[in-house]
Each structure stands twice: as C-alpha cells, then as structure tokens.
Length: 505
Image (cartoon, rainbow, N blue to C red):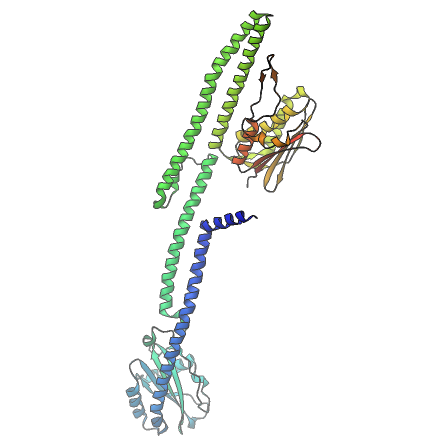
C-alpha cells in the first residue's frame, strides 16, 4: 500500500461514525475503571486512618476498664455496667464479655455489660450474632490478642454495626473481651468493613454514570439507526421498491428533518430529469425521423427519373446515404439519452445472468447465420447479479455486436460466464484483427471508433456506419454497478472483452 493510500485509510477511519462510536464505548468502559481505581486507593487511605482511630479508641476503652475488670469479684457487675455507659460516646457501642475460668476452657462467653444496654431476653441472641460475625472464635484459652479486622454485622435490634476493636483482658476470673463497634450511620460515608464498591457514593456515582452513558449511546445508536433507515430507503428507491415511502417519513430525529426533506426533493428532481430525458429523446427522434422518412421516400422517384445520368445518379446516391447516416445518428442519440435515463432511474432486481447471456448468445447465432459464424458457449448456471434486464441486455448485446462486426465469415465467437472473487465474469472473444495496443482504452471512450469506413463515395467522401458509443455505454453501465470492462488482444489473433459484475448476495 502506498503512503497516500495509507493516509487515505487513516483519514477514512478517523471520520468513520462506527470508529467514533467504538471509541466512545471504550472510553465509557475505561474511564470508570481508572477513576474507580484512584478513588478506591484514596478511600483505602481514609479507611486506614479511620481504623487506626477506632482501634485506638477501642484500646483506650479497654485500658480504662481493665482495672475494674481485673478487680471483678462477682458482685460489682453493676459498677462495670455503669462505667461502660459513662465511657461509651454517642454512636459507640461497647460490649463487655467474660469467659469464666472456673467453667473450663470450653466455656462460653457471657455478656456482662453493654452500652447501649440490652434487655436480658436478647443477650443470648446478641451473643450468637457476634459469634456469627467472626473474631470471637479466634480468642484462644490463653486470652491472647487477635488481629483487628473491621466487620459489619446486624445486631439483635436490626441495626447495622461495624466491629472496630476486640481487646482480650486476662484476669483471675477468666478472659474478658472488650468489644467496641460503631453504628453504621456513624461510618456511612466510608467503606469501613466492606468492599469500596458497596459504598453509597460509588453506587450513586455508578448509577449517574450509567444513566449518562446510556443516554449518549442511545443518542448515537438512534442517529445510526436513522442513517441505516435512510440507506435502506435509498436502496429501495434505486431498485424501484420504495413504494410511497420518503426520507421524511423514515426520519426519527427532528434535528435532521431538513436533510430528509432535501433528499426527497433530490429524488423527485432526479426522477423528473430521467422522465424529461426520455421524453426529449422520443420527441427529438420523432421530430427528426419524420423529415428523414419524407426525404427517403422522395429519393425513390428521383432515382427513376435520373436513369443512367451519371452526375444525377451520384447526387441521388449522396442524398440517400446522407439520409441513412442521419437516421443512424438519430438512433444513436436516442440510445445515449435512454442509457443516461436508465442509469438515473434504474430499477435493480436479481437478474439471472446465466439465462440472459445464453439467450442473447443463441439469438445472435440465429440472426447471423448468413455469416456462418459459430457461437461457442461455456456458461455456468445459477449466476445472479443485481441490476435490470434492460441494462444488462444493452451491455451484453453491445459486446456481442462488437465481436460479430469484427469476426471474419465462418469465424468463431466464444462466450463464457463464470464466478471469480465474488464477481460474475463474462468473456466474449472473436477471431478478428484485434485493436491497436494504444487504443485498448480509447475504444471505451465516447464517439471513438477504429472501424474501417463502409461506404466510399466517388469523390472520396467517407461515410461510417458506427459512431463509437456501444462500448462506452458498456463500461459506463458496469461502473455504475461497481463492475468493470477491459479489453485485450489475444496472443495469436483475435480480440477479447472481459466484463466483471458484482454478484448478488
């Protein structure tokens, strides 16, 4: 690929609506991941500080209660409860639990004091919930320290709490545990005791971001869908299947209704132009052929009157040939106009090229039997392309006519049709003299012909019966369908034209 081609490809991708939509999706996916990672790290630092503070608070509470716990003699439980209520601040939950040594190492834990106070009927249930939250089971018989780990749990009253500190205190009576927690509303704006993505701010931000992303994607996809509807309607208009639909009717985006209206006006203008071209072609042909017919009919009596008069005979012959030439020029002009109108308003349908090519080849063979031409066919079945009967008939007939006109009497015209790289390939070869290598491209130009003159008048005036529009129409029609037409001289002798037409999907 050349440097220019690469730049053109890059430029096309840069302007592509699909590429921009894909880039937008990538941004929508990548941005929250990056932002979430940064916010999570910041929240981790905040949580670490909060844990440090709550841990220190728990240690202070445990230190303040340690003398009283170690002096416990079984009769001062009320004093411990009062002290716990005094120490506990608003939003701080303290529970003092005891595993009596006298009951053995496998004895359970009993709640001795709590702030806020708990009814006696709920003590066992609260203890079970604390065990389920974890941490208590890790305290061994030696009543050693355990790693601090924030845990969330729901207490017996149904309120959510965060366990922030668990401090064992060894005494003569057994192992005391001072458990400090915070009510969830006190740590509402932190992710203490849970993953960061479960925090309220992340969920709110995610909901807003998701809504924003959906609105943007909805807008893009709505515009894209609108363009796809325009594309389908344009295809239907080109193939003659649009019915009464219009771009304005298919539009769903009010902001581009003006564009849809202009498209409808453009289609109406093209249809009107095609009709005008056809009508003008017919009117011009009729207007010119009428006088030509009168001249041709008037020449017949003159031919009889002149008899053997040499000069008069030459004049009548010149009039007759000029009239024939004008008649062919009028026919050629009408063919050009009709071909132009056909391209502007060509109905597109599935055409069986195999059947059409075989039929036209057989017809040419019958029509040119006096020339003893042999038509050899090698046509694959089931080859279908999008187009119209008139358009393809014009193309194939012009190529066959070109081959017949160059073929010597008794020669062979070879016609083949096959599939190749998603294209239908029609090849027509003759045994004629071929074309000058420098004219292989020029023969597809308008009004170019390298044919020998057919009539030679006595004074040297030459009259041609061909006007160089047949192959020009062939290439123009095929290029309008995304195909091509190329010509080459065969190695030994003869000439070949290859037509490439996109296959119907």
